[in-house]
Every structure is written in structure tokens, then in C-alpha cells.
Image 1 (cartoon, rainbow, N blue to C red):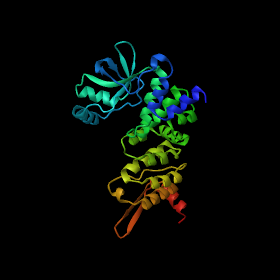
Image 2: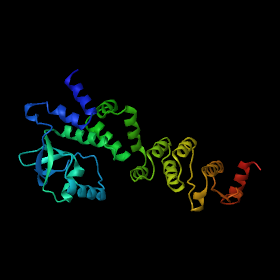
Image 3: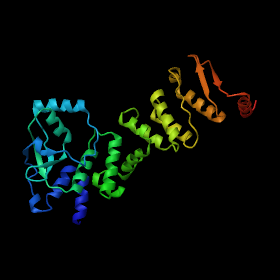
Length: 296
């Protein structure tokens, strides 16, 4: 096995494997992986390749309180820029929380890494974390593929994930930004989002997305809607609090009839099931058109 293949396989095993492989590149990089240094926080700059764009301030303050009480359990990892300056590779939450806790120094592993290696380390460490939202993971995969000039297959080998997993995450980035934000904010699940991807119309995607939130559609219900309205028009059914009480079956009837007649349709019913269906028309000509379709 050549050196290139060894390096690729180590990346798939995580950040520690990357650092271990890199330390063999030359004599100057041979630093004891079990030793740490206490480095002044003022000498450490943030990682410019950090793929995570948002940090929860409340959770950072909670971590700061924990650090004040028990200290740093896991050292951060930095690279040395010059005699007095370091740059963060991994551990940005611990780094930020230590500042909040008014610490002067922080324990750190010191490594030597070029910009590409820095990027790979930051991305791979973030991908392997469990608290990332699906869009952050997808963006990390996208950056790793684009900026490190990898194929999806090579990317899957580096991070130790199936290629289909990477493909499914990347597909989430094709969704409208409104839906991506909903996924970030946990308004919908990844299962909902993956079902929406199969719908060709962006308008339909947005309308169904809004109905997921307002009507509480399950993933299975959205999967059924994605089949029904992949290429046909979908009209949002949420109009008032009353419409929230409609079951999925009633919602589907509204969609089917509305699309068949190209008119707004409303259903009202009581607990016993008795009710009425209202079909809206614009004028006499529109009414005649609807009657013709119904074939009365």
C-alpha cells in the first residue's frame, strides 16, 4: 500500500488518525501526541476554515460554567504560525468558552499543518460530531469535496461514511433556503426534507413545507404527497386554526378535488363525520366550467 492510500484511510478514522499520519511527514513534525502545552488564549486565533457558522451562546455559557468548575478535560489542537502565534485546528467551543470563563491559558496539542490539511481536519472533525444539524454536515461535505478536489467516492473514504450517505446530505442543499432554514431550526426533520427533494416544483416544496409545520404531517404523509404532487400543482391547505383539525385523508381530498377543478375547495365537518364541501368559483363562466368537469 502506498503512502497516499495510507493517508486516505487514516482520514476515515477521524482527526486523531489524521494527526498521527501527518506527524510522520518530517522530523520537525514529530511531536509527542500525548503531551500538551498551556498556551495563552491571546496567542491563539480562530480557525479560518471552521465550517460551523453558528454557535449557541447559551450552550457556550453552560460549557464555560463547566470549565470553571472542572477545567478543560480534552485539550484543543492548534498549529504553530510563528514563535508567538498559534491557529486553532479543533476545539473552538472549548476555546470560546474558556474566554467566557476568563481563563488566561488553555491546554493544547501543537501540530504542524498546511492550509489544506487544516481545512480537512476542521471539516472531518465537524462531520463526525453528533450535534451538527443536517445542513452544516451537508455544507461540510460540499467544502471538503470542492476545496480539497475530491470525488464523492474519495470523500466517503476519508470520512468513513457510505457514498450514498454523502449524496443524500448534498441533495439537501438543493432545497429552497426557507426549507433549509426550517431544517436548521428543527421545524422539520431530515426525513421530511428528503421527501421534499423528490418534488420538482419549488412552489410545491414550499407549500408542502408550510403544511408540514401547520398541519403536523408525518414523514410518511409527506412521502405520499411527494408521489402525488411530484409534477402536479399543490395548493397549501392551511388557512385557519379550523383547517388544522382536518385529517390527512381530508387534506388529500381537498388537494385532489382542487387540482381536478382548478378551484379552491374547503371541507368542514363535525365529530360524527357530517359536513359540507365548498367549491369556489369566480363568475358564471367559471361555474359552468366546473359543472362541465363534474359532468352534471
